[in-house]
Image (cartoon, rainbow, N blue to C red; front, top):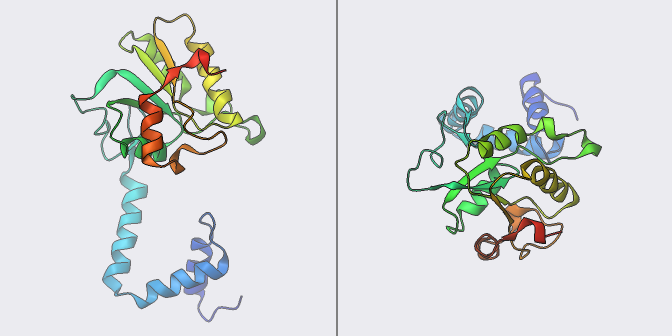
Length: 203
């Protein structure tokens, strides 16, 4: 692909590094930005800079936040005795959209996947175990995707929690096996949270 401008080429190369974006799509997006008012493109650049420089991860649940403690964890009306364990922030958003869960979350940051070189130490499992050991948690809900990696991660955490005086449950399988949680419709996901089952009965 020949470029008439080095600046244009650099912009296209950077945009093409985004997931699912090839060089042709990147060129189309960059040319679109050039056609917009300069103020609009500057606002996009400012938003991206803020994303990189100012975004935080909640010190309690590891959710993406503007502050050290996210709005969910700092909300006194939430039930702090129930923790829903999810893979990433998109799952938090999906469950919150159902308006069926009023507990807190714990974001693992991924799933155990030996093929991809992701082990328990790469996730926030240790902080979850410590949180449960503090004695304030009464129930842990496993809400990972119904995949081999998700089930492996659920089972690993379950074994780590074994013997502790807590209830462990998993979302009901209204979510099809192999489905990613974030793509489930709100009604199905909401029912899965409400109708959760004891984790030990899920395998």
